[in-house]
Length: 222
Image 1: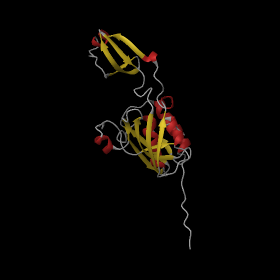
Image 2: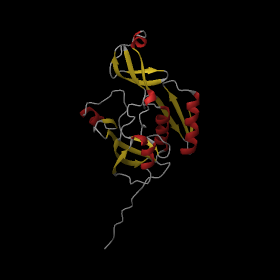
Image 3: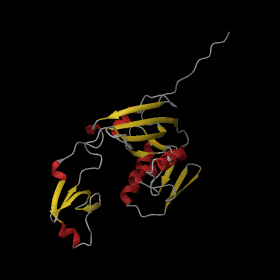
Image 4: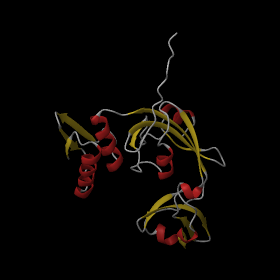
């Protein structure tokens, strides 16, 4: 009688892997990030501007939260995992110095009518208005998830083997692009990217240098 052996494939650093995930706030169970479009619609958190679908990342490159990146190394392909992150492992603890109080007139003069929950840009930071009282506005410049303990449900779908898929992952993750904002043409060992949006030269160079190390079989031009 023949014995059947099942070979378990595990991930390693520098692997490009396809993942799906759901991120929740531990204390409330509220979903704040996910890859499943249908689940987003079911939970009334669908955002037409967000990118949905399985995500491809290169392990060890911190293209996702560092704690998740580290966790996904040496894991079995096709399995589901749960991960709990304390605030300091994800978006950090709340920094009281990043909570500012200012006269509401400052915003009104800029034709911004302040109200609770409004997100604004100020001094190069994104802030959320927490209160508007007595002619004053309290703005929190901490990350919206700062101070929160998080829960992630993760699934590793596969290890990506095709070089073209690896390049797409680098381009989209490093330049924060969706797949309709560029065109990648591969002919032989040459790969050329045509961008539909403006990207700084330095950012392009960083992607090219990273591609030389992680996808050496193809020569990338942007």
